[in-house]
Image (cartoon, rainbow, N blue to C red; front, side, top):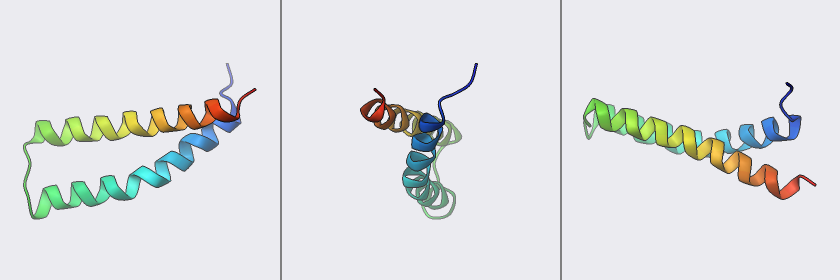
Length: 64
């Protein structure tokens, strides 16, 4: 099974749009406002789902 190259491209685009904000929040959670490890894990999982969801929704707009 091969994944559609357009889908991979859209997921990469969404990764580059979500990753900077995620990195800032994770950096602040380590330095200025410490968070519980469970909260950081849930935030990271949510960011992952956001990247996949944005990629799939953008891909759905261009697929025939």
